[in-house]
Length: 159
Image (cartoon, rainbow, N blue to C red):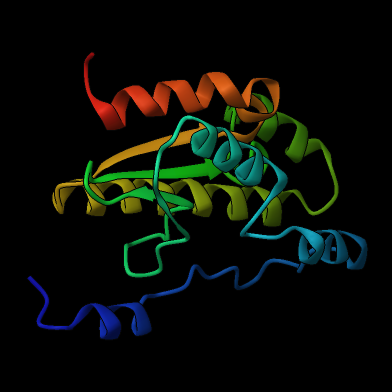
């Protein structure tokens, strides 16, 4: 067990190293910067549906590992709205596509690193008594209401 406080632990986290890899191309760097980590259209759509169901929640809880997008403190439920590309949905297929593209080593390392970080975050929250739900952006896009209803069942418990 570490004697570091959560604030110090956050400060001393080791960032993934991409040493020896070429950085992303200028175009992909611009695209990446345009992607926001908060208040994505999927998050907003899901939060609207949760609000319509009368659920109260906190958003972007920086006090928790991984800064969950949506948190239901009473139910101890942390929800992450994961982007399909950045978090490696259908990883085998995505990895095949990335290896055929430009700067394959960088992108494969980047997505793999994100996936490892996600697993670690889920484990840390679980050890702290939180239930973690990861929802894919494409599932939210397809039917935000259905995703919200599933979350409502988890928050409110069996009827």
